[in-house]
Image 1: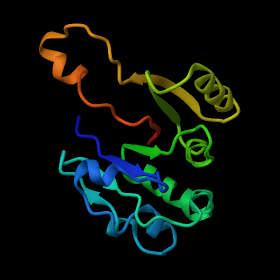
Image 2 (image 1 turned 180 degrees about the vertical axis):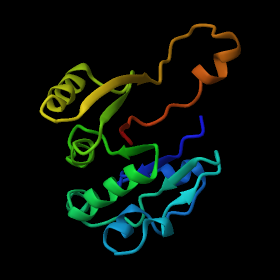
Image 3 (image 1 turned 45 degrees about the vertical axis):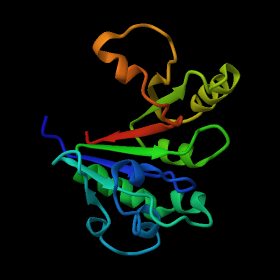
Image 4 (image 1 turned 90 degrees about the horizontal axis):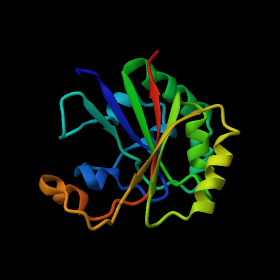
Length: 175
């Protein structure tokens, strides 16, 4: 559709996005947050498409919460929203970490991704209850990693692919 999309790895505890996209992670979000550099120096073009851009997590910081709750993070989020049509933040799990809550509270909506076999119902209900306190809308829940033994025909390779770790993305779009 020609929209410019920025995917930000805000998972500064166990970043994975750079590995999945085969990108360098020598400089990323954590490094940008502690500098006054221009974000264009840190954003990489994705190998997956002309309109997809990636900001990797960067070096592992000692205190990700202080970086994500900083004034600089708020300024960068506003800047990204003005520069891109859609901004997606990949964050750590909502249960047990405040990182995702900090990012999600400053976005237009949140898409929760839960592994069917790896998420217990009580934990998911606690996460959903906690989300009710945020100003952010829950746009939906994606259940992945189904291990059903159905014959999916041409889609069998897709449905039988190796599991992807549970994660959630906070979405922000330009008005």
